[in-house]
Length: 261
Image 1: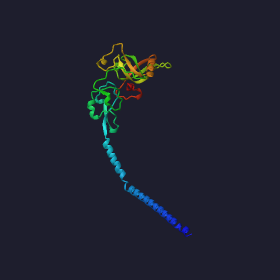
Image 2: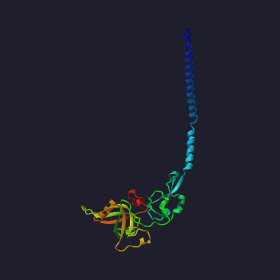
Image 3: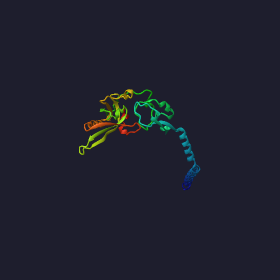
Image 4: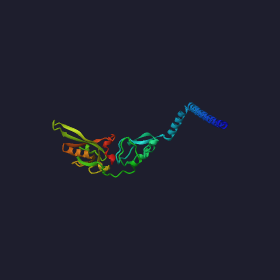
């Protein structure tokens, strides 16, 4: 009996040790939680002004790394083959990281004057190095996909006094009689059309300034396929004439036939 009753003492001692160990672990966990909470609160209170300083530093670094730079923008539309003067471009500031690849800096504008455009440049777009050349491009009648070249006859009245030149933009007008009222009407068949050639010539040399013969001359226009059919149909309805569009007029992207060339 003594052995049986005496055997419970080691078990009780073991249970006491386990309880003590559990209590100790709980106490350690509570202390750690308290320390973490205390450090977090202290860091939050002491670091309120830190984000402002950090943001200011970041902003300063960003300004230093990405300052603005002046680049050249087209002040008006520039057709292929145009010889550039200072009137063709203006300066505009842009962030360095947003500067288009190949854009010309304003500091190099004197190098741009006298060069020729090798492609169409829309107004208010950056002038790129690849779009300029030291020599004028060879005049070609290039027809982009979806477009047609249509030739019409003009005289001094219907052709703006023969002032229309290759690479000009014109509106095609139709003058006809209203079948119901018999009144004369004028409508724009298609606007902002690119002139490909005048009298068979596509260049812009001195030969283009020669006065055409009495019988008039021809003008080749670059038109979308649908518009070419409209102009052709208009010939049978009345008189076709052209009006010259000024060079300083910006144009609708839908009518930028030369942009696809």
